Length: 358
Image (cartoon, rainbow, N blue to C red; front, side, top):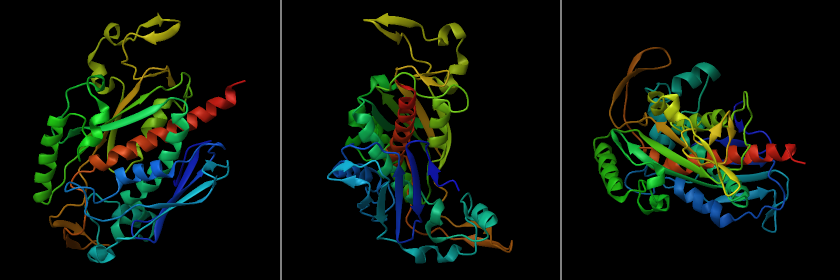
């Protein structure tokens, strides 16, 4: 339960952090889509561990193997199965918490729900699982590329440091030019310095990833329970460590009057547009053709290199030792994950809309 996402374009992920492999099956990919394995690997490389001094030092190449659903470089319309082998597990790093519950982790809730848990790196609850989502998201991006849809995420905040510029003032193509994935070079250096300082203290820090979806067709999303922004929100909140989601004007929009917040329509060369975009490209739960933009808040990673008081399975007080290889801040590696989940949502709604077309 809870291992699948999507309707017509549906993915199911499998595997654990310290198991033999993780992977994903993609059902509903239309036939004839060119499957660029080089592009999939480039997306995997953006998420993989060990990228820089401000990410976990676990060394996983995150190379993948396509087992089915692709023939002569194109999708066949049958399920695409992708597997990613784990190669750098250090399970002994977690033996000390086999019977203890780490603060703010899924240890206690998993144990209470299932009666047992894979304590090695968090097992199924580990963010290692998101590698499978990125692989599937890369396939979704290939579908969207043919439609002229582009998805760009970037780090807009770390701790109390945040960009005070709208995405329209930034060159988002610069995001990959630094290890924190912030398109503002000066701000990126400040963020990197902050994260590195926190890492040296054995602590962690949170941050914000912003995302822009451009070229979305008008009409994606359903008007009641499957509103486009609601499904996007569910996709983002399903990512490990996410604590919040806002789209369009978000919480700042509550400070405006209706007369200030309304997006007026105009006719530009026979195409209906809006003069502003407080709606974030979505009105009534349905895309209106404008840019969709949103922010995703990530908490400080719960694993810190400092001893913490907790309890074991019997309720006895224990000291949980800080140990292992972990990210001091998740947001640099979360950027491709946010993009992948956004791509899965848009591709799914696109295929649903095709059912309505004549």
